[in-house]
Image (cartoon, rainbow, N blue to C red; front, side, top):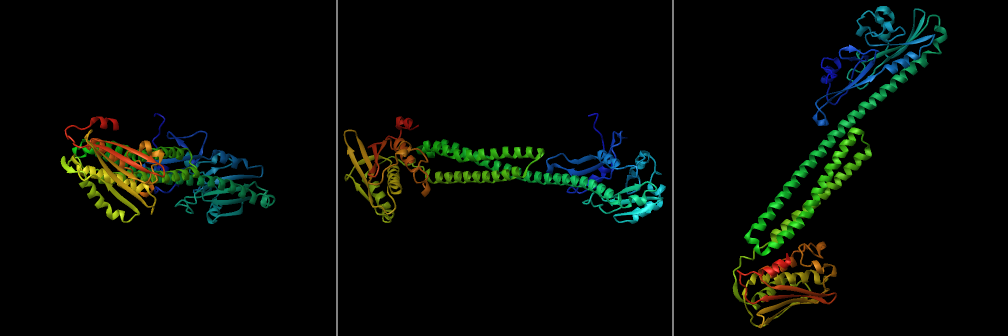
Length: 507
């Protein structure tokens, strides 16, 4: 910290504060000063400054870059020979480069008399009268000069404060000899060298400005990612709260196992979206590192493409999660609130057949019922009706191809010895895919996702049969022959004595 310097009083620092944030200020050429003293040996210096701030990802302040022109000045000095030497003057006529080093830097070394205006007033007047370049005779010498602006993009370009004079001066008596041989080469060489230096500086400044623009773009992308991540986190938290409330709600006691299935299904899209956002944040950090080390265009384009694909994937996962929530709300109907009543089994089955008749008229499929006239039961007729409807719907949706004729049969048999009823729903369709057989009753398993089915129907049937109706369920299927779902239900249900064995088996 002892080596740090306070440069608040330096002219180029004050000028940088007055320069707009999107502009670069370049200082006049002078000797470098450190710790309040001129650096020895002399270091002719040109400075470029730009304001920085939080929008750049940097601390508020001024970025100052010093260009040491000492090697460049030595190259100019090396151009001199026995016949010609080069001189460089600032706008006030002070020498920055002179064969006699004692004549240089008078404005900084306390020698105001060391100016061309003092030692050669006519020559100084001629230099100021010229717009760009020229040559003249002065005291038996040939003087060729050029006027150079060292910052074409500056607000001071073309003014009296933003130019230098380059002079090639011949020795006395060599005017005629050097007139055609040295005038143009020296000026062209000096101009080319200086122009190359200015071009390099300009490209560097443009690079700083481009990096500034990229930092702003990255900050904008970072803000978008942070907002998306916050919204996704809130959505994920709301989903978990919803799951907790559903688990604790007595209204969903008949569908308690379904909550775990929904939670598992929701974790897939929301977890995928969270992983996508986390990956995008990692890519953003990598890109920020690349910016500080010199980012390439291909890196930026790759990042933008990766970000676009990642955001699309996150949005798709969130939409899928929203669809699952809406489906769950529609299907999670509280059937456990029905009272245990006495009913004739044929009544809810006939009512179901009547309600399905309009839909069956739109197909080539028939629904038949083979039932005894009376089977008295004690239980939940509404839940039983919903179970049978789901099985019929499953056959209509999956067992037959469009316009394929077929039949669905609901049968019931009373077994007095076991005091049970055997219900079956059979079809003569195409059967169940063997790959789905082991997971048929799992939530969100479906062979018809392309047609909008989400795979909750048979899962609900399994839950209601085992946990509400206190029965058992099995399925038999033969490819291209058909499928039979068989329910074995007790004739009388005791609400206070649920079949925990079946529940445990499913879990």
